[in-house]
Image (cartoon, rainbow, N blue to C red; front, side, top):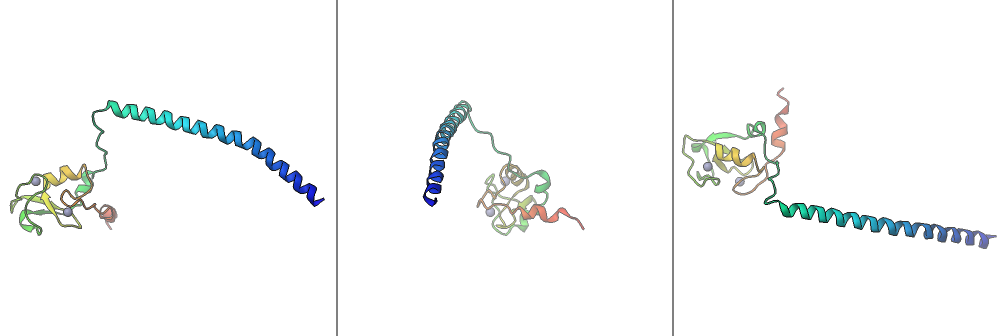
Length: 138
Ligand SMILES: [Zn+2]
Ligand SMILES: [Zn+2]
C-alpha cells in the first residue's frame, strides 16, 4: 500500500511538472520579450534627447529659509565662494551649509541648493532632519 501511494504521488508530481514547466517557459520568454521591448523603447527615446532634464531633488524655498543665513564676517572656513569663485564681503549676505560649515553667497547658495541638496564645495549631503525638526512651532 505504501509503495502504491508513493507511485501515485510521484505520478502527480510529474504531471504537475509537465504542466508547470511549459507555463514557466512561456512566462520566461514573455518576460524576456517584454524586457527587450522596454529596453529598446527606453534606449531609443534616450538617444533622441540632447540631455537629460535635471531631476528636481533640490531644496524648496521654504527649506532654503531654514539654512542659517550669516554675513561674510561670520564665515569660519574662508571667505571664497565656491560657486562663483569670488570673495564674500564682510557685509554680504551668505549662507552656511549646516554640518560642514562651508559658506557661500546667499544667491549662489540658493541657486545651487535649489538644484542640488548638497554642499557645492565638499558635496556633503544636507541633513533632512534639518528641515523636518522645525515643523511644529510649539
Ligand atoms: Zn558666490
Ligand atoms: Zn561643505
